[in-house]
Image (tube, rainbow, N blue to C red; front, top):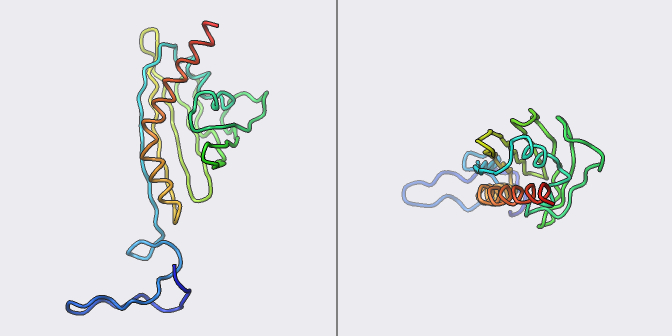
Length: 182
């Protein structure tokens, strides 16, 4: 971003002239001089033909994540650890990112939430389970936030997250059915 110079910002333009072209300060900054921060919210609603109890039990267990979440290659969590509030683990994504995650909300068969961090990116995801006849509705909502150069990664992932999560939840629904049928 140019050499590190200890000068103030370029003076305001006078008349129809442009500002003096001084070297830029280090780091990505907003017009007001603060650090760039981008937050993108996302959501998805999916109807599953399974009870809220069965869907919750399968979806909140990190050991199942690599099977139904398309962006994951692997999950690093102890094999005998049951899901619980405060549970922590790490994942390896298809693009090589290794976020660290922690369960921040755990109300059995009703609500589950996680927070994941990787460098300058933080993402949250909350799943709400509502019984509907013989099945359930899963509402996913969250946000991706990035600071500095990671603001672009957060904005991009947040833009794609809603559709990806909906597709992943439908795949999980199929896998839950296969576990029951097989």
